[in-house]
Image (cartoon, rainbow, N blue to C red; front, top):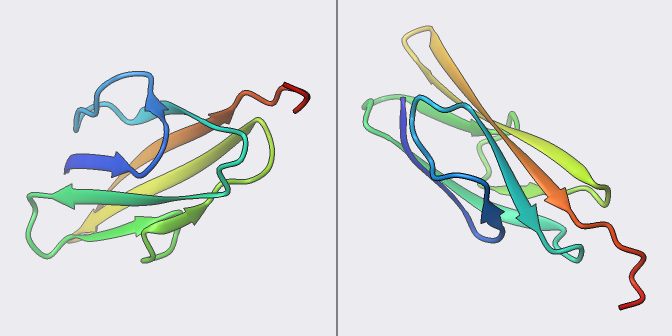
Length: 93
């Protein structure tokens, strides 16, 4: 149901496709939040970012943070999961 999904920071492991539902995005260790933007061609559909309407989502200070993007229309739901991954090196270099 989504036709595009972007994030303000990070490197995707593959290009977004509406029928692919899980993505891994590598972000720098100092990233604490990203701005997400999803678009859908289904008019009247609602999009939630990790259960909220706000496009700005927090990235936890750990190796992996999974963020769900859910599109709902007329009782039908589709959920995409973005796993943000930090390198988690020791910070000395």
